[in-house]
Image (cartoon, rainbow, N blue to C red):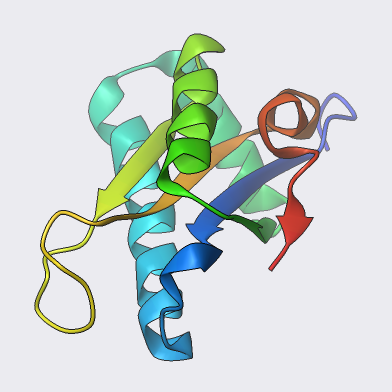
Length: 125
């Protein structure tokens, strides 16, 4: 850790959808990758620094759950409000879910204390 700060990414998934384990894993992966692509596409130098440090630290990821679309959207909006890299995933509808079903959000990678302001009270999946 360059400045003593830990970095992480938290992936939030909807438990109310009762997705199969494979579907849930795919949605979490979509969210994680999309958040990193957001950083790369943004040109935001601080986000890029966070990404680099997160990679150096081993790419810590935590998966937590919410029980509704409304809770998922609250997490997403709060991450945006705090200026964090984030992604919101809507399913394509090819397998288990109707098209457009919002399934997951990734917050970060970013400094853990800031990510925790958004996701710290959510339960592990």
